[in-house]
Image 1 (cartoon, rainbow, N blue to C red):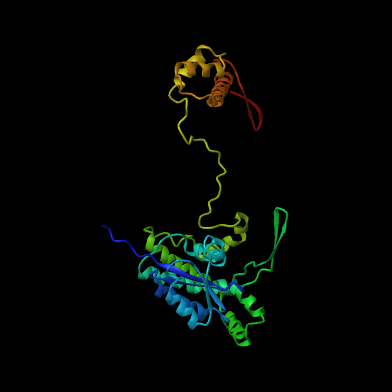
Image 2: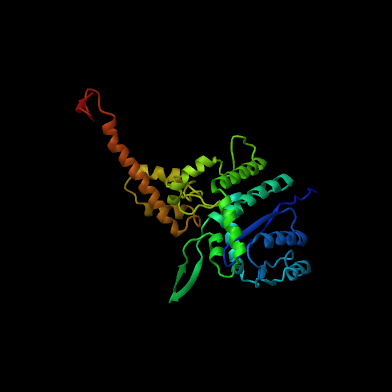
Length: 334
């Protein structure tokens, strides 16, 4: 029996008030790793923690997690059953940050874990200090419509600096760290980590990362990205070309030769008369609703034949006759 591979998981924590997000990779999905990730989250998230609300899986709901929350002096709660939107803050960051950085590929091994840690370390600084986001202020229902109002876009760092319950010492530390960071350098670190991560799952050495573009190419595209709207890893632009192929077998494919023969013998015959004959000769094979399909096929065939009859006289002039061809100099003869 093939041995199952142990994939790398992630531990994500989001501060509801400010949107400050921390994420670390986990080499194993069990309660000890969850508690270790929680210790990192509480250490890195600025400000005092009041409570922790977790998912309902056994890795979170256990005595170890409860003891950890009591040690941190925070209230331990969980989401209600069948209320999947109660983890909206974390799930939103999973889609807007984590999935956009590393996609949906599954990774395993120490090297992949180090590459993910390198990406997450740079991404947490970039997202929390330099990436503004909207925050919902309130909702009002007017009949069947819900009107939402949002605050001005701000980074999690800016929200913490404005919050009255955050101490001056923490605010000074946030300002000091923000001044020392360079967002372009952080983007370079993220791109380097993505290139290393992509090299683990790709055999094409010419490709440079999940987006496969360099940082300079990525920055050059930023002024045009808003035209494409919100682009996610699963987003695919709709094709503008008309579809010319069939998605399933045509109902008249096996009898189409017979239909053409009757059209050639009796060009004036209608599609409805052809359909009634087919129903008589092949009882139970064609439903009444397929008449429209036959009418469309016969109409297309007659248009092609009519076009062929018309253009044959133009494209193939008789010997000794002259035809007009419009060119840049007026009427030319050949």
